[in-house]
Image (cartoon, rainbow, N blue to C red; front, side, top):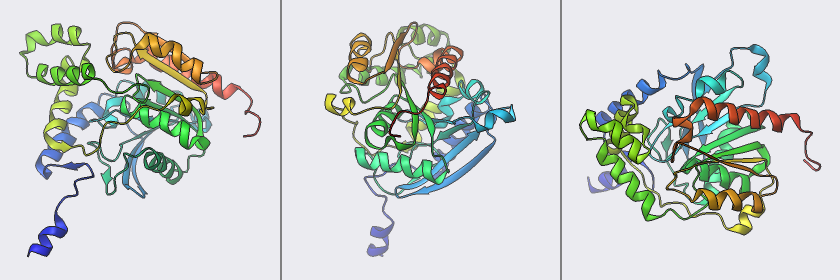
Length: 313
């Protein structure tokens, strides 16, 4: 009996759901958000060394656009691909889009092995793209997903046509001000409805004024346990190795990074990098201004695709 108990005990180094009932409640909240975005053309699971990765595929209405280099979306920590509901309509109108649920975060992927280490994270993403048959992609990451994307550009850039970072991790050590904002925002989800718009404006937190988004976040906190440390930022030497075309978007009132500092620093360290600050937003530029961000990202990708391949590739 004791041997059987030991064998079935959850691992402490991989993310997990607390129980099936809370997981299903969370999935229902996610599905309400998915319904607000573009309809997924298909869903699939691909196997990697670290577990099963669940992938949503969105397609352009114009068949001629199917041949364009696809967009791959990597969400932030504590979320899933439902985060991209404001962006999938605009992006998938122009290009094939794949949204990956990151193993270790609350989604429909199933983690079996830890992958928080930078080399393992890069291996996971490379294996997932390979399993999807994607040899060249425009990779987009938000927050923790931005760290995954930046790490990929440093360690395994072979499949990357470009990378877009939306108020990303990986540039600075995550500070107390960001964790404080996260906790205060979570408590604010319990505020009376009449107060939420005012709190949302003060905290730069769209979660508070989109009922479906608020429901997903609250269900996530109850249902899932993340088992990984906060990622360390890339060093300046590591950033200098990046040769993939890079577009950095920062929220003017971001609490994860210091926008003005990174606006100067990233193009100085990464040759050819493009960086800009978006006003009237904090950590969620793609949620606060989806049409604007979709247009900016697609314009950047179009520009990359119009260039001749760099020598030696």
